[in-house]
Length: 146
Picture 1 (cartoon, rainbow, N blue to C red):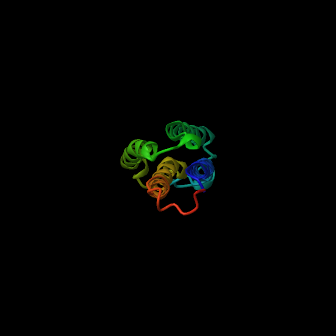
Picture 2: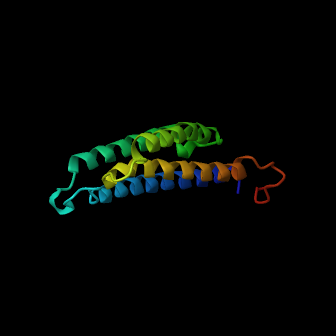
Picture 3: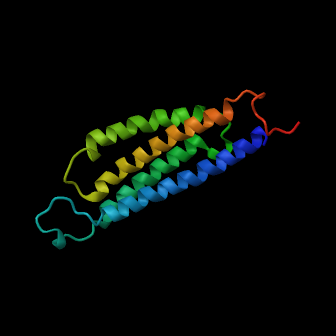
């Protein structure tokens, strides 16, 4: 495999993983709306459509920002991964300290923090994989065409 095949494979992996993570975040928010948090009579509270929709919009905006930073199909070096991690790690910490870290909230309130945590874990794993793909010296690559 040449380096272009590696980057093509890596771009396909990144794109499909990002779309999957976005779906996980939206699913967590939608199902989180069923958990009303600590209230006396949980059966009396309707499903919070507006709040869940706002949470899904926030997750979608963060996904679009992440996708625009990474541009996974043209990823040729791990620098964009580091930039995305530099933006999303403090964002996750701020979300945890200000919103998701409190207890007894409705389930959808934790969805954005969960999404950001999964994104940060994915970025760390992608950085490790990119070191294997992009940092190997040419003499170590055994599958290159001669």
